[in-house]
Image 1 (cartoon, rainbow, N blue to C red):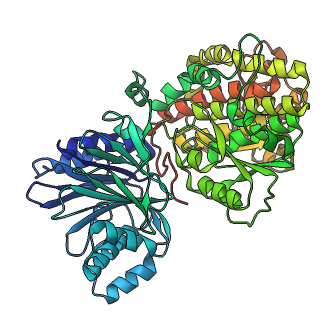
Image 2 (cartoon, rainbow, N blue to C red; image 1 turned 135 degrees about the horizontal axis):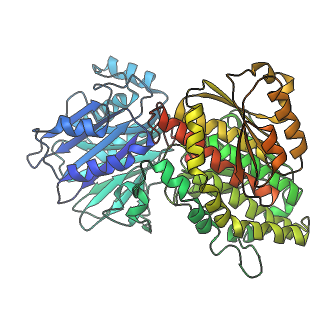
Image 3 (tube, rainbow, N blue to C red; image 1 turned 45 degrees about the vertical axis):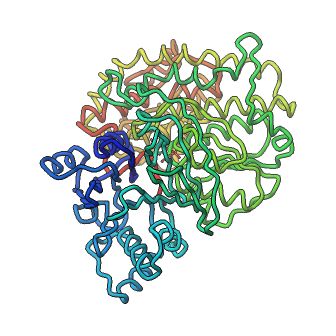
Length: 614
Ligand code: M6R
């Protein structure tokens, strides 16, 4: 969703901002803009609908000098994507320019009050209301910009990360955040600002993560100063981030998604590194071990997540219940937060989120904390809002995921939840030693089996050609692989725009089988597990009605091969880890179909990588 980049220092701001905005493109956006303050104090704003490349063309020949500036990529919420609604927004007088990520929920009330005070508006955005509110307060109170921002934000209901610059104030950016990410990079007599540390990692590895309700006064001549909305000073806590630039580039692949799919042998290795002893198979997860009393006494675990992370959570639910015998509920974070859920102090709420910024998951975390539950995070992005808002957690450590379609994060999330279940189950005594060892050995063997699975890439590319023109797909799975079927369907629909539905295989005869004809292909996951024979029967029922079957089967399984029209053979591991292997051909199938359809694989229409608004 919206991206923010800012710079104040002694170099030209524009190249820094444009490079940062390019790095944020993966998040999804529909317009872009910059505001620059030049040495004479002139405030120039340039913005347009479309990609950052269009903004670059729009900037050609324009006065774009300035060692202080802010830039933005907008994902439309209020008002259509067009030049006027693009950020930055000028205040009425043209003295302030603001960029905003988030939603101001009470913008209508604030706007009406400003109109009564003589303000008029050019755009349909909530953000323009905010910049005018700041201007109004600045003028009526005769206070500093930072003070006006602080007072204005006390009147705002909603989510925001903002940055404001002002004519005649050439050394300072004022930034603030509430429920939307904002990080300040520390340089030498210079500062960087971004909604994602990765976008400014070229310049510094020292960051200050702004907390909710904080306003930062970022002045090139002074140390960073942060105040709370209440006016008290906040500590400036500088953190070091180790991230290599090569992780943010495509490395020879045509798309980030394909790179990330192919990285999975390595990302799973990174995820388990130092956590499972190759000699003894012992699993050590410090986040769990340090809080073992909570897990030993938990009456229930509630997992909250969205999208792909929700699918991973469904697999986690099955593994934790099987190994730990603790009841687990999996909730869409967006539903959980609004339904007055029953949360007890001996419940554990686990939040699963790749980005660690998903607004609904973050809100669910806050709700759970208020209710007194112990909250555990499973995130990928280090220092993200959810990682910081939870009591403890485990990072999946799969590296930056840039493609909007989540791939390596999904397999990392399932791996972490399997390791969690092993640690907790062992401590509870609910898990036989041989199962513990078989699964931990299974996890150690995943990188090799994933590498073998990836060798099917060409075969899947050929298969994808046959099905590129299908209008609908059904994905079937049972047990551990039912969530994999949901995930396969989500991958296909989000990047190819083909309608796809994931179902538990046995549900077909309760209605969906009516959809089956020669035009409705079914992807059936029929690997060797508890319900294997039953899934084969489900496949036969579809075949009998003229449906085409692509079956995902265990290597060497001839029975399944005979039942299917097309067969994809994957290696076998312990049952609870099979989704990690079976999801990979489904990622590749979705990828190749989307490529053949000419889709924008890494940035599919209407989608954003980090869903920081509700
Ligand atoms: O960053 P998160 O894991 O919290 O994101 C949740 C979903 O928005 C995300 O998984 C989404 O469904 C993916 N684009 C699917 O590939």
